[in-house]
Length: 179
Image (cartoon, rainbow, N blue to C red):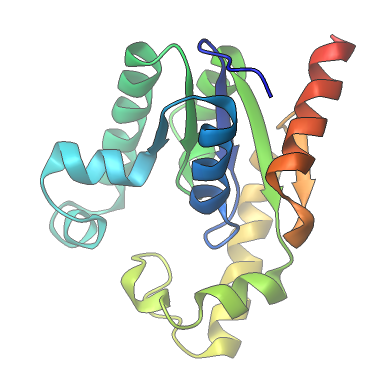
Protein backbone atom coordinates (compact mmCIF):
# COMPACT_ATOMS: atom_id res chain seq x y z
CA UNK A 1 0.00 0.00 0.00
CA UNK A 2 1.46 3.40 -0.90
CA UNK A 3 2.34 5.93 1.76
CA UNK A 4 -0.23 8.72 1.98
CA UNK A 5 1.41 11.50 3.99
CA UNK A 6 -1.65 13.77 3.91
CA UNK A 7 -4.42 11.33 4.70
CA UNK A 8 -6.31 11.49 7.97
CA UNK A 9 -8.12 8.32 8.98
CA UNK A 10 -10.31 8.51 12.09
CA UNK A 11 -11.54 5.40 13.88
CA UNK A 12 -14.76 5.69 15.87
CA UNK A 13 -16.77 3.12 17.79
CA UNK A 14 -17.55 1.70 21.18
CA UNK A 15 -14.94 1.06 23.88
CA UNK A 16 -13.35 -2.31 23.18
CA UNK A 17 -14.07 -2.22 19.43
CA UNK A 18 -10.34 -2.31 18.65
CA UNK A 19 -9.78 1.27 17.50
CA UNK A 20 -6.33 1.57 19.06
CA UNK A 21 -5.09 -1.87 18.03
CA UNK A 22 -6.31 -1.56 14.44
CA UNK A 23 -5.28 2.09 14.28
CA UNK A 24 -1.66 1.27 15.13
CA UNK A 25 -1.55 -1.38 12.41
CA UNK A 26 -3.17 0.93 9.85
CA UNK A 27 -0.68 3.68 10.64
CA UNK A 28 2.17 1.27 9.89
CA UNK A 29 0.50 0.08 6.68
CA UNK A 30 -0.04 3.64 5.43
CA UNK A 31 3.24 5.08 6.73
CA UNK A 32 1.40 7.60 8.90
CA UNK A 33 1.77 8.64 12.52
CA UNK A 34 -0.68 7.08 14.95
CA UNK A 35 -2.40 8.91 17.76
CA UNK A 36 -4.89 7.71 20.36
CA UNK A 37 -7.02 10.68 21.41
CA UNK A 38 -7.32 9.51 25.02
CA UNK A 39 -3.53 9.11 25.23
CA UNK A 40 -3.11 12.61 23.79
CA UNK A 41 -5.45 14.02 26.44
CA UNK A 42 -3.52 12.20 29.19
CA UNK A 43 -0.21 13.51 27.84
CA UNK A 44 -1.42 17.09 27.55
CA UNK A 45 -3.26 17.08 30.90
CA UNK A 46 -0.53 15.24 32.82
CA UNK A 47 -3.06 12.91 34.46
CA UNK A 48 -5.06 9.85 33.51
CA UNK A 49 -8.65 9.84 32.26
CA UNK A 50 -10.06 8.42 35.51
CA UNK A 51 -8.39 11.24 37.48
CA UNK A 52 -9.74 13.87 35.07
CA UNK A 53 -13.26 12.46 35.44
CA UNK A 54 -12.94 12.25 39.25
CA UNK A 55 -11.55 15.76 39.69
CA UNK A 56 -13.32 17.70 36.94
CA UNK A 57 -16.26 15.59 35.74
CA UNK A 58 -17.36 14.44 32.31
CA UNK A 59 -18.28 17.92 31.01
CA UNK A 60 -14.71 19.16 31.51
CA UNK A 61 -13.31 15.99 29.94
CA UNK A 62 -15.53 16.41 26.87
CA UNK A 63 -14.37 20.02 26.46
CA UNK A 64 -10.72 18.97 26.65
CA UNK A 65 -11.39 16.08 24.28
CA UNK A 66 -12.85 18.50 21.71
CA UNK A 67 -9.95 20.92 22.10
CA UNK A 68 -7.29 18.19 21.81
CA UNK A 69 -9.05 16.71 18.77
CA UNK A 70 -8.87 20.07 17.02
CA UNK A 71 -5.22 20.49 18.04
CA UNK A 72 -4.29 17.07 16.62
CA UNK A 73 -6.10 17.86 13.35
CA UNK A 74 -4.32 21.22 13.12
CA UNK A 75 -0.91 19.71 13.93
CA UNK A 76 -1.02 16.61 11.71
CA UNK A 77 -1.95 16.73 8.02
CA UNK A 78 -1.62 12.94 7.95
CA UNK A 79 -2.57 10.70 10.86
CA UNK A 80 -4.46 7.60 11.92
CA UNK A 81 -6.42 8.66 14.99
CA UNK A 82 -8.25 6.34 17.37
CA UNK A 83 -10.91 8.44 19.06
CA UNK A 84 -12.58 7.80 22.39
CA UNK A 85 -15.93 6.02 22.20
CA UNK A 86 -17.86 9.19 22.98
CA UNK A 87 -15.76 11.60 20.92
CA UNK A 88 -18.13 11.87 17.92
CA UNK A 89 -21.11 12.56 20.20
CA UNK A 90 -20.04 15.91 21.69
CA UNK A 91 -19.08 19.46 20.71
CA UNK A 92 -19.56 18.98 16.96
CA UNK A 93 -16.58 16.59 16.94
CA UNK A 94 -18.18 14.34 14.35
CA UNK A 95 -18.38 17.25 11.92
CA UNK A 96 -14.64 17.91 12.45
CA UNK A 97 -13.91 14.26 11.70
CA UNK A 98 -16.15 14.13 8.62
CA UNK A 99 -14.81 17.40 7.20
CA UNK A 100 -11.09 16.76 7.70
CA UNK A 101 -10.54 13.09 6.89
CA UNK A 102 -11.97 9.62 6.39
CA UNK A 103 -14.13 8.40 9.27
CA UNK A 104 -14.38 4.66 9.88
CA UNK A 105 -16.88 3.14 12.29
CA UNK A 106 -15.65 -0.11 13.86
CA UNK A 107 -18.92 -1.86 14.58
CA UNK A 108 -18.55 -4.67 17.09
CA UNK A 109 -21.32 -6.87 18.56
CA UNK A 110 -22.05 -6.09 22.20
CA UNK A 111 -21.32 -9.71 23.14
CA UNK A 112 -17.76 -9.30 21.82
CA UNK A 113 -17.39 -5.92 23.58
CA UNK A 114 -18.40 -7.56 26.88
CA UNK A 115 -15.83 -10.32 26.35
CA UNK A 116 -13.11 -7.77 25.62
CA UNK A 117 -14.02 -5.33 28.40
CA UNK A 118 -15.13 -7.43 31.36
CA UNK A 119 -11.67 -7.57 32.95
CA UNK A 120 -10.79 -3.90 32.41
CA UNK A 121 -14.16 -2.17 32.85
CA UNK A 122 -13.20 -0.79 36.26
CA UNK A 123 -10.45 1.33 34.67
CA UNK A 124 -12.88 3.06 32.29
CA UNK A 125 -14.74 5.93 33.98
CA UNK A 126 -18.06 5.41 32.17
CA UNK A 127 -18.01 1.63 32.73
CA UNK A 128 -16.46 1.51 36.22
CA UNK A 129 -19.76 0.72 37.93
CA UNK A 130 -20.46 -2.13 35.50
CA UNK A 131 -17.95 -4.77 36.54
CA UNK A 132 -20.53 -7.60 36.53
CA UNK A 133 -20.87 -9.00 32.96
CA UNK A 134 -24.68 -8.65 32.98
CA UNK A 135 -24.53 -5.05 34.16
CA UNK A 136 -21.71 -4.33 31.70
CA UNK A 137 -23.74 -5.77 28.82
CA UNK A 138 -26.78 -3.65 29.74
CA UNK A 139 -24.61 -0.53 30.05
CA UNK A 140 -23.00 -1.19 26.65
CA UNK A 141 -26.39 -1.68 24.95
CA UNK A 142 -27.62 1.56 26.53
CA UNK A 143 -24.48 3.46 25.50
CA UNK A 144 -24.57 2.07 21.96
CA UNK A 145 -28.23 3.05 21.58
CA UNK A 146 -27.37 6.64 22.53
CA UNK A 147 -24.31 6.82 20.27
CA UNK A 148 -25.57 4.93 17.21
CA UNK A 149 -26.99 8.09 15.61
CA UNK A 150 -23.44 9.50 15.52
CA UNK A 151 -21.59 6.31 14.59
CA UNK A 152 -23.96 5.59 11.71
CA UNK A 153 -22.95 8.83 9.97
CA UNK A 154 -19.45 7.52 9.28
CA UNK A 155 -19.08 6.92 5.54
CA UNK A 156 -16.91 3.85 6.17
CA UNK A 157 -17.99 0.89 8.29
CA UNK A 158 -16.15 -2.28 9.20
CA UNK A 159 -18.10 -4.94 11.04
CA UNK A 160 -16.93 -7.34 13.71
CA UNK A 161 -13.70 -9.16 14.25
CA UNK A 162 -13.17 -9.43 10.47
CA UNK A 163 -12.13 -5.79 10.51
CA UNK A 164 -8.48 -6.19 9.56
CA UNK A 165 -5.92 -3.87 7.97
CA UNK A 166 -6.62 -5.49 4.60
CA UNK A 167 -10.40 -5.09 5.00
CA UNK A 168 -10.00 -1.40 5.84
CA UNK A 169 -7.61 -0.85 2.93
CA UNK A 170 -10.14 -2.39 0.54
CA UNK A 171 -12.97 -0.30 2.01
CA UNK A 172 -10.95 2.88 1.75
CA UNK A 173 -9.80 2.13 -1.81
CA UNK A 174 -13.40 1.52 -2.95
CA UNK A 175 -14.57 4.67 -1.17
CA UNK A 176 -11.82 6.82 -2.72
CA UNK A 177 -12.55 5.37 -6.18
CA UNK A 178 -16.27 6.13 -5.85
CA UNK A 179 -16.00 9.74 -5.12
